[in-house]
Length: 140
Image (cartoon, rainbow, N blue to C red; front, side, top):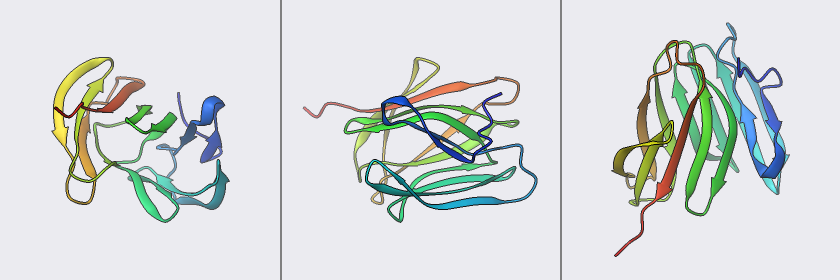
């Protein structure tokens, strides 16, 4: 199980792990400094949310546990686990096209909204950990 007992923890290489989809009651951790950024996490069975410097980064419904979440200039990558299939929303660059990979297989290209949000559905029920990678596509 990938449950993050600490709610938020730093990993090697600048990644973070956060969320605990097993919690019955809401848990929140605020004002955690990580590589010059200030992070905030809210999590429990029905929702997990991450903010960085007051800006939206990640949300799942129902709640999930996320490990090795790493943001780069070209996108994000992480592993996610939950008891049920989940709707994920990730914050990226505004109106930009990305290719999305689930467990190493491309599920296609998607474009972010004006606010930079990208919606994904991930099948998690009885799947264990699922890897997600979102990579900015090259512009012609």
